[in-house]
Length: 158
Image (cartoon, rainbow, N blue to C red):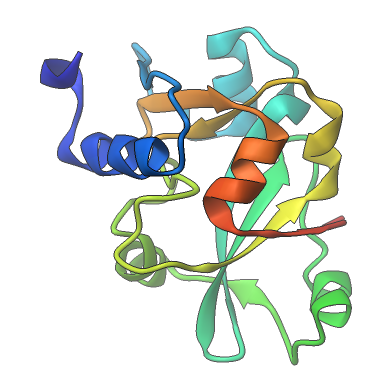
């Protein structure tokens, strides 16, 4: 399987193994840059897709792992987190913070750990799917594994 994986996927897989997560990375035939496309590709509800969205908040990146069925309410989330503001990161900020491109950002495998928020709605799914470092790759995990992997704070994001 390693022959098919991009170097970014290998970094993500190493992070998964370090966290005790044994999921295989699945290579999709087409890019799954949106939650709807990813859900269709793996045969799950869109809500079971854990979107990795990078925001900029208080001069630092903030990774928000949100259900594919939700939109992040940045004003409400900023209030919940006690932050001045939260705004979408630029493509360059995403790449700098994660080493990955928009549409393929994984919850782990970044150059350094990111402050992370995990959407509490993801807890309703027995299995969730996240990007694995490129737009063509995903992997399954549980909500508990996602929280452990990211050391994320569980919060309502919508």
